[in-house]
Amino acid sequence: MTGQVEGKVALVTGGASGIGAAVAELLAQEGAKVVATDIDELRGPELVAGLNKSGHQAIFLHQDVTSEERWAEVTSDIEKRFGRLDILVSNAGIGISVPSITDMSLHDWRRQTAINLDGVFLSVKYCLPLMRKTGGGSVIMMSSLAGLRGAAGLAGYCATKGGVRLFAKAVAMECASAGDGIRVNSVHPGIIDTPIWGKIPTEAAGRGQNAPIDPEERAKLATPLGRVGYATEIASGVLYLASDASRYVTGTELVIDGGMNAGSAVRR
Ligand code: NAD
Image (cartoon, rainbow, N blue to C red; front, side, top):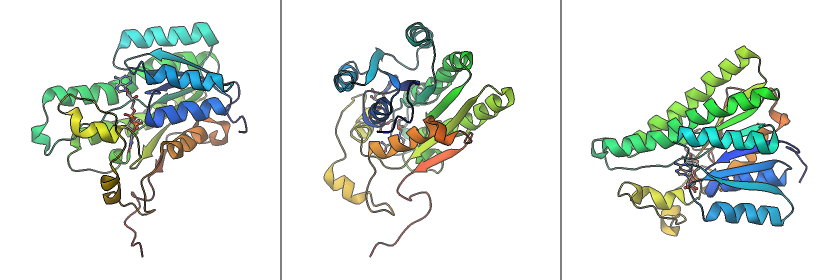
């Protein structure tokens, strides 16, 4: 590892699983002090214990990103412990799939919007003031390929992720106008093998499940590069946006999707 974010303090929401866990791990390995937050109180503490055991610096805080009260507590805790925040990865999210948008209950629409959009709004509202105190930082919002194009069965999810995409650009412009040293970008994963896929069919029924993509399902998920992606491959993109290597990059969208957004390839 090359210390690309050495000495920086990073907050990763949804840091107990999948992409968030891979991001927390890579940022810690690259020298950041990582605060991983999540509602998952089992895997979050396990992850940071593993990182600390390997000589990295990480803590876990329980946080539901939809709670404004908790955002105030988490950011104040970070300020007390570290005196700064340099990197925010607003990653926590869920996906609710329904056969048709007319099958979606208002309750599920609001729940998905609360986590995927309100959570990102609150992250910015509470983290930007802390970042400004020490001269800036990097905000990375986890959108999706579904924030760039439609997907049948995922209209509500697309609405939230499209919202995140433009929210990132608008906040980037606000920060640029203020000259506050904060860069804001969105990341757009394609199909990434994380527990979220095990949860999608059951979320609507109110049951969470943690299962990797079923091997038969995986075969159906053809992409131009011929496979699904891995959380570590998203983490690499996040590391770039978090580090000074991307110091001239703001308001942009980093698509990491095995080519899915570019078109369809014919594999021979
Ligand atoms: P995941 O289910 O493995 O991880 C999501 C994490 O968010 C979980 O640990 C979960 O406990 C946490 N979370 C859920 N609700 C929360 C809340 N209210 N407060 C705090 N934490 C909460 O899924 P993942 O695939 O790692 O997804 C991470 C992000 O990447 C999400 O925003 C998702 O929409 C996005 N994404 C994933 C894919 C993919 O194919 N896996 C593709 C595009 C975008």
